[in-house]
Amino acid sequence: MNPVEPADEPLTVDEAATRLRVSAQWLRKEAAAGRVPSIKLGQRRLFLERHLVEILAAAEVRVRTGLTTGSLRALQREAERRGR
Image 1 (cartoon, rainbow, N blue to C red):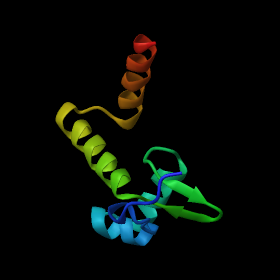
Image 2: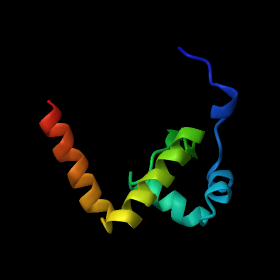
Image 3: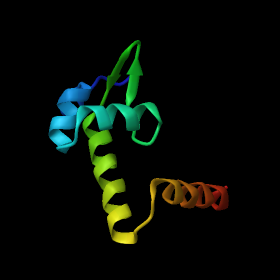
Image 4: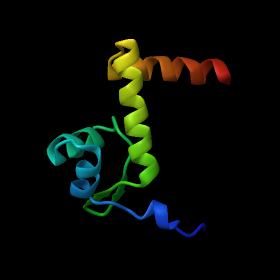
């Protein structure tokens, strides 16, 4: 098991939302639906720095391409299927 790097210190929903400049409610809803990466530990939802980077990168792709979350996921599934 790898130790958690200092930069990967878990963040609460409120801390992650503040860093992303979104509402905690939106982030909680998106994480619960599986649309953004997170860790569910008991009743708590936590985020790592790399999760925040992934969330921002996905948002940037949607802005550039006009893809919705659903169409982005469909493209990702298709790419995975072809890679196998």
